[in-house]
Image 1 (tube, helix red, strand yellow):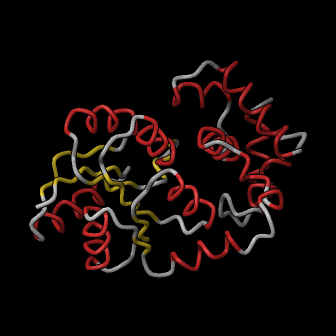
Image 2 (image 1 turned 135 degrees about the vertical axis):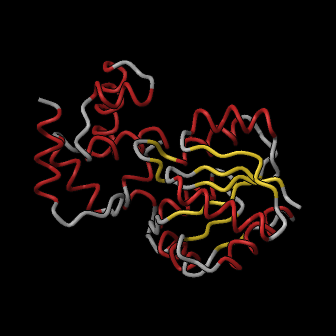
Length: 226
């Protein structure tokens, strides 16, 4: 029996995972949709495995991963997410994730990932290994400027291109609007863009986000900062 904690922003997903895991003999010791709450629970409960989604509404699971790495928490992380972005796979593994599995995979694949994590082995689900190869196929990191962003900056760029203002982002991340604006200015300087529409185009071009109507998104994001 493995003690497992769930982090996913969809309650129906957590309920389904709990049923699946308990049917397989595992124990779900807690769950949350919020990274801050999850961190407090993880420090208190010390589960063996964390099942973590990367897309948590306005938050990023990568930030929680980075915090767990900083605190050297012994909990092994299995990323279970819809995100099939090569850079997110690479970043999650760099931050200490033991396994990366895409939602939609068979339950047996998730069980294999959990077993591997407990045994302190690495596991990449079906199709994920190919995503990692895409990262290594790049000539160098300079060819992809998004590699220069920290997990916090990646989180903020995601929120910016979704049309959230500095004030709104500050409320969600418990930061002042001035601090958010500083983050935004710094990441735009790193990426070499001068305005929010340019930021949206770059994010879509480098597959940080999946969105077909870039014009509409750019307009909404620009309006949020005027």
